[in-house]
Length: 567
Image 1 (cartoon, rainbow, N blue to C red):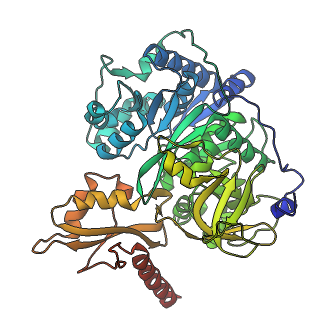
Image 2: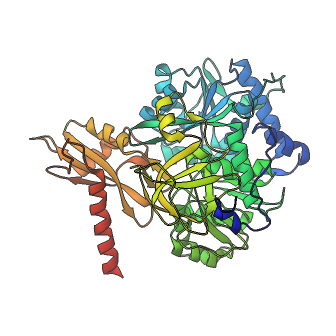
């Protein structure tokens, strides 16, 4: 085995090459934690704490309520919330009811939300009061029958809960008063009710879905990745094995990574509950707030993304905060610059390593070792327990030897069941049990893997996955646009930033600002191009296909030249 999996020779004795997975659904881990640690703090949120017993009891109440609304086993229920106690209660409540969670980005505009609700067939959605008007606008075009509404103030301590509506009005210019009637339901009222009996469904650990997590590519709109209870439990158990120095019930996990991203869901939401840790949740990333929170709450685990660590390091007053509680950080969602890694470790005294994965693998497949092994510069690390990986030739589809570049493929219990209602795309991505990642890379002789480029044209900006075609379809609707291509260009802070290349119709005019305002009406803010370039024509193949890669290569060359000038 070691010859075909050379990375196993690198494992410290504490990490087994294979694990046993209890055939329990994801929600059972909350029950286990509540029974073992009923009065232990499960969540700290902006000055208020919630015990495991409270979170479990609240999830049970929501589950029974959902069943009374008609939610059956396998029905999809959407969550459109930032990281709050309500998002945790909603997640486990939906699973307890037998439903399938559909995580939805709170930044989505009507167009994006309508697409995801239609595609998933979600019957209910749990969302924030300030997002309620947005949801009601798309309800008639979808299968949504119920909207359950909550608010940030509902989770705040006194007197913050009284002050927050005024802060909200100042920030967003809106205060929404939702009544508990018809299609509308208030989570606060649901949680005040006495517990009702819960219908327990038959359960298949391997086959039953826990999650539809949306991702996408350059060939179409986002796809629903079908992740089973087995997928999520196995990947979280692998994470737990990797963090072998962490102690059950004793760690404090900083929850900045959004739960609507599968990385935050696995490494914060599920891992914390599986091992009865305390979660310190922040609804959005703000460097100053994050530093103050670390200083006061003393988190020991800090899963994050490069832009988060960079954002903290760029604070000139970072040294006035005590960050020494941080012991372990695994960075994901984008490449981690070595200088960021080194500087963050110097300031905190903890360990920061890079991992790798994708939504289709729940998400982690590789990571560097946190302890007891030397750092390997530029590597995404080695495969996790029970995870196989290989490099396949783009020409022949056959496995390549060490050192040769091809497509990274992975196999393991964390690999998805497939794409929701997309059998052809599933067949293209899953072959003989292997998940073809679309990323190009190689493996060295010791079993360490390296990513050299993306086969896909997906843009990763600030840790968010952005799909060019979605941007292009919006800009094509502008009356002055004849041709458009969107691409990710190098950005020292966000990793990549979105740039749109525009060819205008003859006799028509448009400005950067005009296109920017147009895009903002239809796209979440992080998808809106930061840069626009107007051209007479775009590079194309002989058959007329726009060469996006040629434009990206131009930008990379300019970026490199500018870096050399600064050096």
